[in-house]
Amino acid sequence: MNNYVQRFLLENLDIRGAVVRVESVWQQMLKDRQYPEPVVQLLGELSATALLLGDNLKQSGRLTVQLKGDGPVSMLVIDCDNSLQLRGMAKYASEVAAQPVPDLLGHGQLVLTLDMHAMREAYQSIVPLDGDTIGEIFEHYFKQSEQLPSRLFLTASNNALFGILLQKLPSADQCDPDGWTRIEALAATTHDQDLFKLTAEEILTRLFFEETIRIFDAQSVSYGCREDASKIYDLLQSLGREEVDAILSERGEIVVHDDICNREYRFDALAIDAIFREAGPTIH
Image: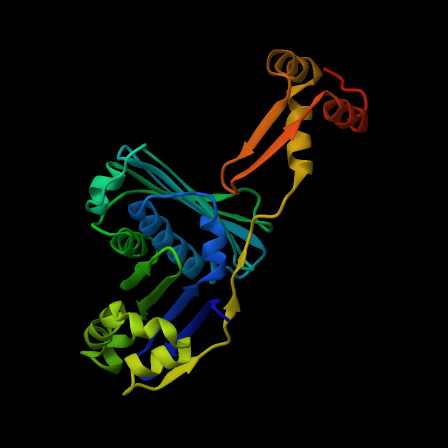
């Protein structure tokens, strides 16, 4: 399985973490997008982070992570539900050159939205973009929201993305005062591309070979974009027949583009008639 998140615990150190590895699902997300390399890198690292966060969802719901700024990469959006169905997109200038992450994103915000079915309304957290990498931006977020020292080690290419999350639990220093520093240093060696050919268990065993590691069952990651024309029908019906007919008269057809799934829906006059017949009479 090459699309998964797998949690682990370093039992004698009271340090927890997770490994994420995504290949075919990531390739599906990038298909026909033609993103420049810096955008692929940013979106891939954000995808890995969102999956590491989404793996902690205990109930049915959805996590949406947005990075919005005034730089050449103006928006990154990743959406992930509790079953780790992933989708996402990027908006960027016509030309994006390789440069530091703060210059690519500019001044802006991290917006994290948690919409759980059991909640009356969605929870949203907004913090400034603070950090020189995607990992540092979220380490800063973890420090503010969870008050747990956390480290993220992320990498992404056109073919795959990979990441490791480490979190220091409250009693870690009592277990081993030097444990956190040691594990951070070992995890930082994950830039070694040879590691990506291994399973999560092999990676963790190689990285932390002196530690007692409890490895939990892997959670499968899948692509979250499935064609759902009913939502588009609802959108058109909400606009009303008069406005839809005006657009048809001007353009000859209705075109709706689903940015996050990179899918286009086209409707001619006959299709629009069928949609509004199914809806029945509308009262204004």
